[in-house]
Image 1 (cartoon, rainbow, N blue to C red):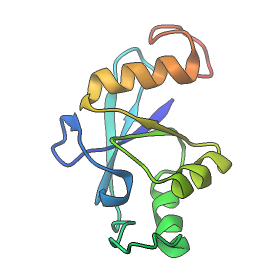
Image 2 (image 1 turned 180 degrees about the vertical axis):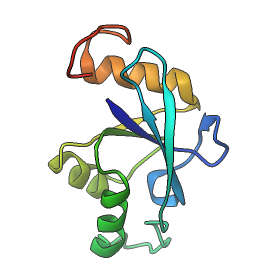
Image 3 (image 1 turned 90 degrees about the vertical axis):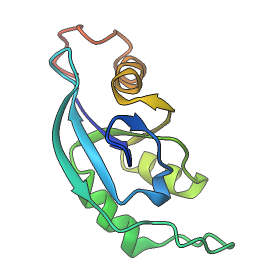
Length: 121
């Protein structure tokens, strides 16, 4: 299972979805999270108080997240969360070390823990 992480530091889940300029893509199927790629993106948020949905920026982020079952980030707005979920991508809020957040996200998505051996993972 692939899970994307919004991280500025590269070690912590430390960014809001809309502020991310990259997503770290992890493969979580082998029992240990393994970074497989980094996907640069244009920030979704432009700090507009009305927070309109930005289809062009969101579509580019979706392309970067292709193949991911979830995105882990500090926070996400309700509309982007709904749009991700419509496309089968879970939006999971977390703070702290990436590995711990990935373990928790994997457990939530799979319901079995990390070393389950299920093909769905």
